[in-house]
Length: 246
Image (tube, rainbow, N blue to C red):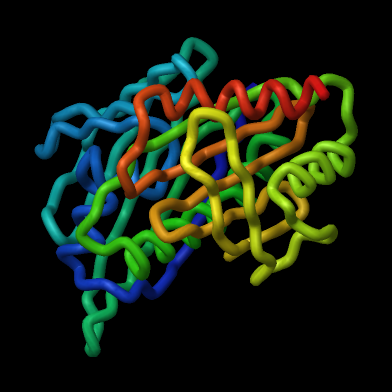
């Protein structure tokens, strides 16, 4: 049985409507704050695609009004499930922009857990968007995704392992300084800019790094704005697998 849902959020961003549009309505812009690798055909009736961890999802662009409104809708699955996204942009005095996001659709049998995950995740994504527009304006990022099973560890054990590997104190709090030297990657030096019970985000001089744990999985969504070595995603995947196997 399917269940309808709707999540609506509004945030004021320190950027012009044109900058916000570039961030939400172009592949490189979306890559710089959201999940996966994205492509978007800039027209109503076009296709928006997202690839994360080898999984590819397509959506139809149902509205495309540059600088004002973007809407997409995934195809309807056999069980009736689908997701729709709408972004509404409004410029404000002082060079800021109000972005309204509406995420709706139909969820499946485990709708409550999925809804809760979406409800908790969106404020974090919008925070990443704010960090991007504030600290990396005019730049685009290489998106990095990695995932590994928690290998029987509890969420507190996973968080402790991540914190130790990143030289972070527990509990992980905003403002804490992080340092790591992953093999095959540049050293990571930054600070925690957001944290909750499931994830935390670091900002460095050239990147945004998100670490998420829960449901027996550990996920990383990173956005690298500086020169990135070949194989950065594979190197982070190896780092994560080694961390959880230790």
